[in-house]
Amino acid sequence: QVQLVESGGGLVQAGGSLRLSCAASGRTSSSAVIEWFRQAPGKEREFVAAISSLGARTYYIDSVKGRFTISRDNAKNMVYLQMNSLKTEDTAVYYCAADRRWQPPPTVNDADYWGQGTQVTVSS
Image 1 (cartoon, rainbow, N blue to C red):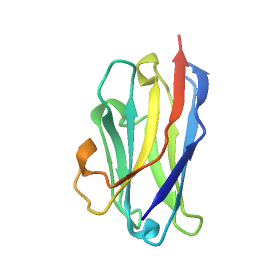
Image 2: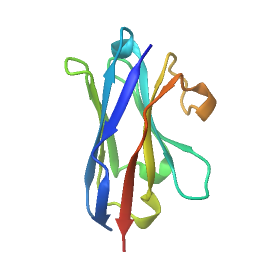
Image 3: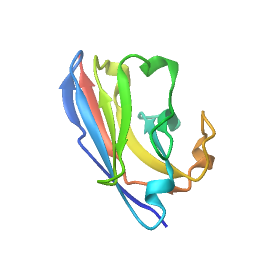
Image 4: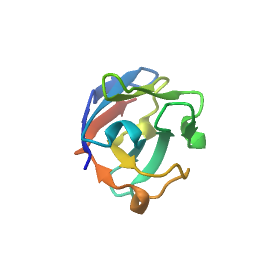
């Protein structure tokens, strides 16, 4: 069992930055692949970025490459998503998810555990 709690969302102007945090707890949290998904109003939830259990591997969708950076600190049981050069199309609820397998890009059905989400709003 893995529990996930996101934080760090908010309102930011286009071109600005935000750092999302995902606090993971549970017996297997440090061995899990952690993924970030997002869901914009009226759209399906989509994968954004993933990081392997030890942080050696990362994977991003093309639209965020060069702007977003995923990282983790297993000593603190934290995963981060640094988002720079934000665009209005990045507006969404962002969710972190735990997955037992490294299988990028994952689908929504691949994730085993989910957080409650944090809202990111980018204004023009």
